[in-house]
Image (tube, rainbow, N blue to C red; front, side):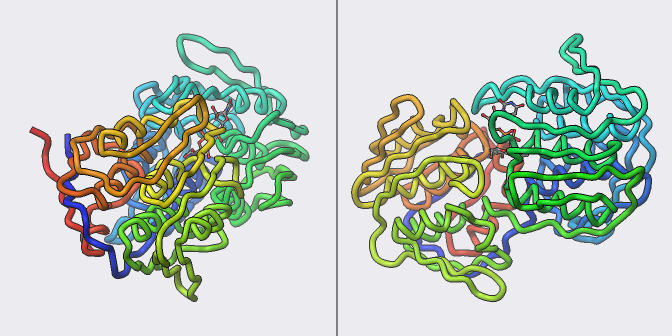
Length: 421
Ligand code: UD1
């Protein structure tokens, strides 16, 4: 297993390019199941999760081929030859569960392993299942697998979920695109990645109204066709590097980053003293004077994303005054706290709430990465800590940050990847 070693204390400066959004690329790859024609995706990030999704789609019979040397443009196409999504793939990556709706809509049956819990919480899939049942699927749980079937086509229906779920909205949006009649998804998630999926589906011939709002109206069509679609830039990668620039006291240009996708992140970072200026082809980010604490509650988009909580917490450890973070999306998303405390952070957690008091210094330590965003947070902490920080178990990072050490080196950080001994 790899570790990342950081010698802290260098302000970051220069330019990096923000890659395509992982959380848009994964559902858009799954959309390849909805047609027998070619779907061409560009700006696909080169990440472990994209490889896992490629494996899953291949074993459903879909060929996934890079069509450019850099591997960022993929062609997907083929006939569905197998409707089972096995445990060994689904347990590695929960987004695999998104194949359930499309397989059902396309071929009337699917057997998809239950994903189980994960580090950050129980993460049930009841909303996905309830929504698909409303569209006419019969669902049984057997041997750890969801066995879903429908006679004929799925039928449009109105689905109102009690709370917002990104994954359930995506599963239902894809299924409804090929259902008979009209589906209304109320209380739908509004994340930019949902808008990107919807835009890709529309390019494939889907009829979707209300994109970007919390009510999606889908008029199902008999078939979808091939299309070309470019993935939006990753707003979480953007936010993570913005925090890195700010805490290191540097100034970084994030090429291709989009301000209009940042939601509350931009307001909170500005409140904390980070200067973010929109330019025609990206965002310029720097620290103004000192950083100061800010209060944050994680919420569905356009609220502050749970996927930015750990990175913002690192910023808060270096800010003047106190910050209060309330995590409302996942019940166990403070696993980075004990590691940050070992580096000298002053953080007190009580249930969903954490109180962070800024400290004068963090000191390098050996720390253990527990999940994707926690790993990024520990690297950020290493950038400003005195001495050397070794972030162990960084395989999580490769799921969601493309070549993070290379990008940070380009900005002048002293970072390298080494094999664990
Ligand atoms: C997606 C993102 C993830 C992000 C999360 C919240 C992808 C691939 N992953 O995950 O990075 O952290 O959104 O922004 O896009 N829930 C249920 N029942 C369900 C579904 C969800 O109770 O059927 C709960 C979850 O446990 C969680 C909350 O709803 O507490 C939100 O989860 P959801 O929006 O579904 O997250 P994911 O789609 O799994």
